[in-house]
Amino acid sequence: MAGVWLDNWRGLKNLMLLGVVSDSVRADWDTVVNTSGRLITASTGNGGVSPMAGYYNGNSGRTHASSPNALVFGTGDEAPGASDFCLQAKWTANLSRVALEETNSYDDSTYTKTKTIDCTVQNTGADAVTVREWGIESSILGNPVLLYRAVLSSPVTLYQYESATFRCTLRMRLTDPV
Image (tube, rainbow, N blue to C red):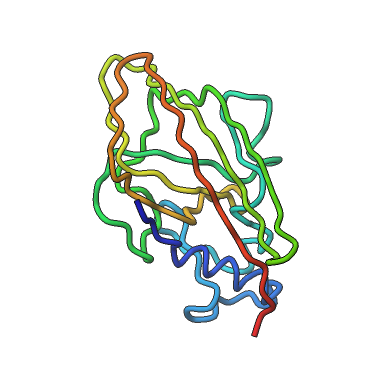
């Protein structure tokens, strides 16, 4: 299963590199669109977002403010595209995040950080739900922004009170900007 790093992630990386220097969006440089389709400009956003930061578990003591990212799940099955700004059909009701574990490792020889996130979700609704898509969602001043979207190669159906653990492994290599 291969997903796509979205234009939002490219825009946020550029915001970090640009240091949020202007109040206007630079065409195709730092464009970020929230999950409702609204443009977030450099003046309303912040450039400190990274998918390598902490992840939020809605059922733990952690808050979205201290852990800016969340794994989100949905039932859509359209192939991801870089211009996506939301999941096709986000699963919002009857979803309980039962557990979330993160591990980080570093490779000093290649300047690579690897983050593994295990997120266990449970269907608390009466109807079965088939998880077909997932993503990495972050927050810019209260605006949810989707950074990554993928469609599962094998959908997972959860019946009432069934749980599944999804593992996400991210690798980022530090390189100097050109």
